Length: 541
Image (cartoon, rainbow, N blue to C red; front, side):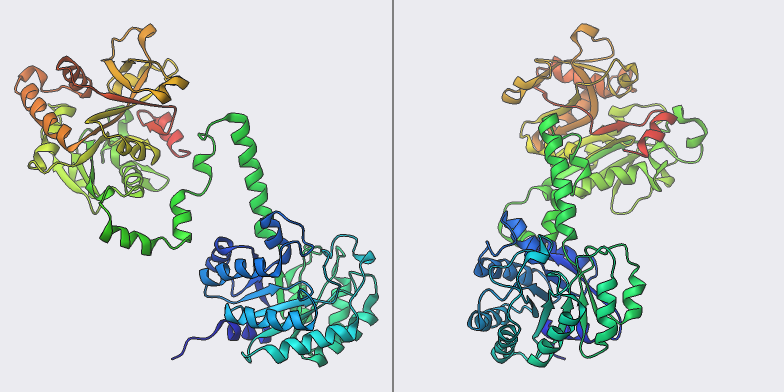
């Protein structure tokens, strides 16, 4: 069965027995958003297309520039576009060329208004604006209909009589003339805050041909009023651009005032969403075929064998990592954060009530000795499970939430051992649970962005005057580093006294053996869940 054309889609909308809606878009990305929202059609707004170019809605953008923009919009979507064609960009001859060029780009319809070229936006001193000669405008419509090769292509005639202060009689006179000239529909426009002019026109007009409206000014009118009056098509004319402007202004002001991204990065669309809207899946498939792989060569180990005694009865029937936050276990949030940056190879070390830890698509390693051993024993078991096939790997905990910024940044560093330190520890001694305080070769400051910082010591006994932050529970090891780490752990845990050793002892041993441990500073982007208060905070993380 042949695919329905965009022009036929639009004509079906125009002739529908139901009230239909289309929404403004001004470039390929916004057109895709309109389509994904479920709209059946797009309004190629003259106001918003010119605005996104940064020029006035006075034909300052040439019609060929508008046409180029429309081509991107059309290519990005499968639904029809009704172009706001202003006055047709000239006389009957320009109108005919416009129609031919629109059809070449699969634009379904054009709306032209009966004012003079260059046009002026209807909401700028509308009553002072002259209208086009009615007969000349009818000739433009006829020329457009003669030029089209697609029988379904539609021309909508926009009547500006109310805008220019000419009243109902003139609006009806012009609408009838345009209808007789071949217009497929009439767009009746009004600048009043109430729909009185529109409803009066529709009552007198009846059903001679479809009526299209743009309720930007009379926006408080219940939609049911339009439906009951027999309106065919409602255009939401400029609201995507206006909402985007508000958000962009706020973001720009915040960036200027704060000079960092921490307060906005998690409040805006991730870059991955932009990629998705751009249709990046095809490119990603090609990258898998033609480019060296990165994320697929990355792995993660999550240490989640302990009960979490500090949470009391909440962990009587499940380990801490399976406590729900916003309807999902803590571990699910951790896995989602890794998956978001392409890390699928994830090993989880479980112990206490291990049967309760059963999320899909994970590799599980069991530490049945969890009650009498420590973190290093769990880590060694995870590394042994790799059987020497090591990858770049992030080691983290099963009760620490984090934003995807953490793994993204860790994997951008190529040194064998890389850790994250939060320089804003605020005197909280509870952070020692993760391994303690860190003293580094330099404190966090602007100049560390131009130099490399390394760990000097880590533990619970670092003097307060030497503390540069707290270890956050994230260590990235290269494939080479993972192999070395396994050898070190084998040696350490051969000593029964080290049976319950944790990550702080590992860092101390690495430093003793003169391993360089690269430090990355951050402020925030993580949450250690170690109390009921932390659980409450996690709901907002």
